[in-house]
Amino acid sequence: MDAQNIGKKVEQLIKLNNMEISEIAKKLQISEKELRNKIEGKDEFYVSEVIELTEIFKLDIKTVAEIFFNDQITNINERPKEENKLS
Image (cartoon, rainbow, N blue to C red; front, side, top):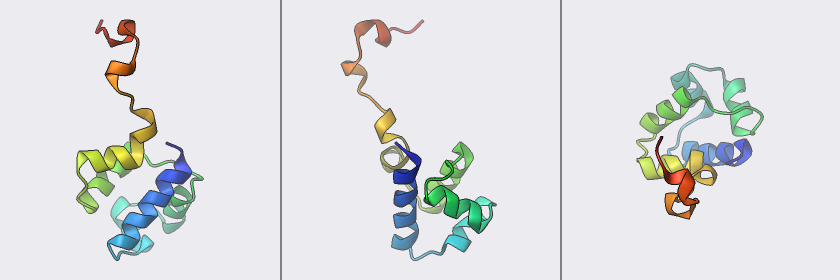
């Protein structure tokens, strides 16, 4: 999923939870400007920030996948059989 779509979804989470960008930035230990850049898709969220956002918003694994990874997840049954083998 591209950074801009992720940013829009994070912005929606902030609004839905009646929180402020400044409040989330503080919890992520980044500046408001850094968070705004991530929300605007100029920068990507680090894994540690995704984990923290998961805790802040009490997200389940399915929601996390839909927000941050959905375009990257493929059904293992749709892959050619050679790719399904573990080495």
